[in-house]
Image 1 (cartoon, one colour):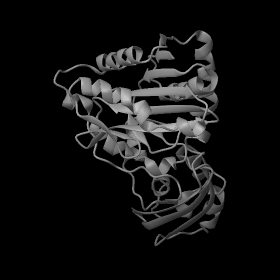
Image 2 (image 1 turned 135 degrees about the vertical axis):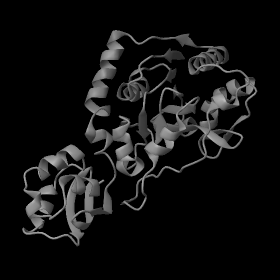
Image 3 (image 1 turned 180 degrees about the vertical axis):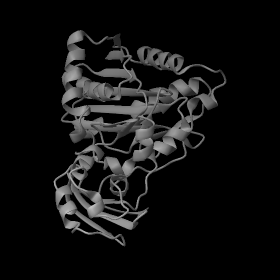
Length: 327
């Protein structure tokens, strides 16, 4: 098994790396890695329904869709991520959350931390979650990856993932909020996340007989960069891949109440209906029709709105008001 510890903190590159070792490296792998300020959403989630968009923009938090299912998670440099890839004879035997979380639990128990597997895919300390895990299976190969909250910024976790559930109506997988904790708060000795990563890697190499260290070559890095550029750094994958959804939200403006109703398919607005008690001169259906076939993405929407003298359509309602109503 190849043991990889790479030092990139670029979320787009790192999620592309997960796909690379899964699809392009034949040997089984174990990898440790970190992302700086990112929300990683599950493959089958509606991205906008999982994030607090204003908070994400304010804090410059990257949003990336991963290859596996499950719920959205927040990553920062106080969080350590691990990935296993494994090839077997039976795909059904590949899905085994306990198998891949067991080494992590052993590391913590050796540090006198009461860690245990609980529920479908979590590791907890005294009932509080510090690790969420997800898996992706293709033919006879599995990728298992998980988060390890070590010293993460808790306000950012709650702020970045907080969203109004009444805005979005869809059938996408929803994240389930749980009480979380940092590993650091339960240690007898204070160590850094880097020192903890070393202990995890040492335990893996001492537990598995066939371990050998591996560093990405320049060829590997170039291929990962290509996957990042073509997929994981694109709006089409991170937002446009979202399941179809209906969106509804009302906002108060200087011109009165404005209610936005939208049908969105593959990230593209199919239909818009705007209601409210605002006054107007020209028929707002012109705005509604112009917004159809536009990506549900702020910059693209602003480009459409900039073509109109909005004061003729919405008295006392600005472009900022309209954009706010659409997210």
